[in-house]
Length: 157
Image (cartoon, rainbow, N blue to C red):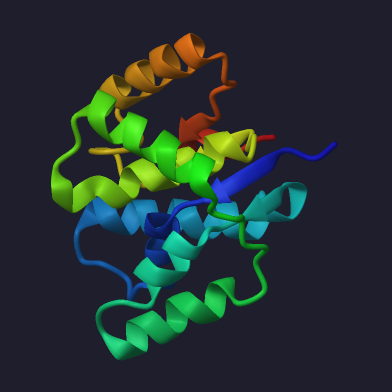
């Protein structure tokens, strides 16, 4: 079976944004484009309604590019179990209210058994602290944890 990957909104944003003058951001954009071109075809990828909602926000032209990039992506269901799990993560990770959506990204990926959650959100999703808490919570609940990583970390599957 091919690995399954939940693609979080930040990856889509880096892929479709105009090239940045910030060297780090520009590097992330290039890595994202390389991942998109070379790795994406080797995995089964998914998004959620949360990705569609976030990608639709902001500058109209940028939103159009983001939505165009994910138009044909399979969308994972959000059910009551996902909502409940997101609440558990939100409280355990102690996310600020403005980052509540990040708990939903984690919950969707974990609940649907994704092998990987791909993100550039290294503050509220792909941080060592969040990964540790996520693993501890899921172990307590008997749930398998998706590997949370950046495109740079998933260049080989």
